[in-house]
Image (cartoon, rainbow, N blue to C red; front, top):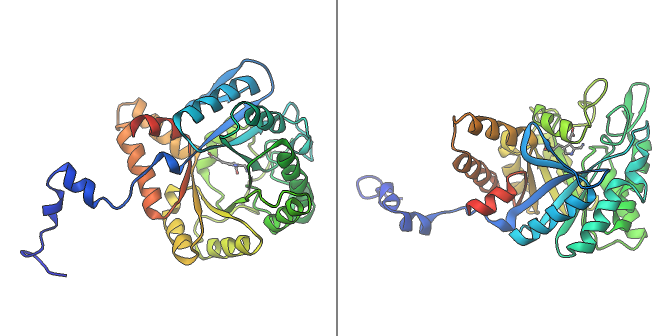
Length: 323
Ligand code: PBG
């Protein structure tokens, strides 16, 4: 490569059309998945205080929101459910008349083309708020797998297009893949939350999903934030077990992990721009301290540039407006 004064990098920055031509990364509507929360009840949409613009919907208003997503051209949504009541084994998670199962059926009925992904986890449904079966004060891995399999199958029966396990139990992707295949759902993809960290950035989500752990924390199953090689091992396992899309979560503090996953394994990578990442931007923007549109687009573009093929983000609807 030639050097200054022959090479002057500023030459290609001189005007917007030049910049457009040499731009390396383009964020697009095609990259977006919009997360939504659903509760029991009728005709309600309760705004989540730490996530302005995001709501807990009842099934009927959720269907209206789903229609809006389809009209905006957003490819898909991922759903989180808040049950009527919680118990130690999170039984509504795998009930065929549970809130998610009702929501999936209603959306697939009204807006069949919108991709409906379902988060498979127990923390919203258990009274202790952990992502699995508790014995001796900790989440038990293998007994939890059985419940996650039941939950995945009930989502598939309701019509879910993609199953997304977020619990971080060992072996869950393989167990779910096998059960889906045995029951005729071999064409339903699994989007695995493969590198999911025990992050403080989930704070607002736990208000939204009413899923904060009632004792302890999630560090015995979610990953330790300082680790990146371990993320590659988690991803390798999930690929072997049959995952189709591999997720890194959160996104912004883990851009290095996104890059390494994409470089090491040429697989579809999803990144979750989580609730705390959204809340920080919203709060600063509401104070007039930053420009929401520019900051959000810069952040989402950085996730894409790091190697994400798709982004789960609460900004999805705004992005369509901004682009
Ligand atoms: C469920 C789950 C969580 C999120 C997605 N699925 C919370 C958690 O693990 O505590 C977080 C999403 C967000 O913060 O936006 N296990």
